[in-house]
Length: 110
Image 1 (cartoon, one colour):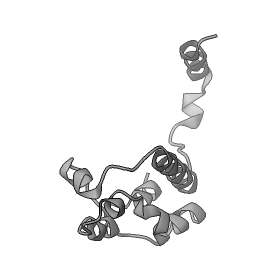
Image 2: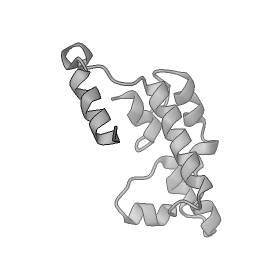
Image 3: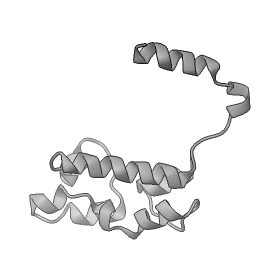
């Protein structure tokens, strides 16, 4: 059975009325996001923060400061790995973090 057929059958069997309004917990979203970014980092450097900002993505307060560092290794690292927001978001459903453009803050609002 190919993947498209399998997922189409699975979607047809899902009780959409019963599941309406439900979404994954913020803790799970945070953990998955961290794992995906870590996997991306393992395959090579991330896009630099200045390039990310130039592409139209907003930066969190810590990314905004790091983008000023002239070292490409620093601006291409994943600042979320050392940010306390990641730890809070992975352990609490509604973490006490509020700064704008932090992906972990955005997860708790969805």
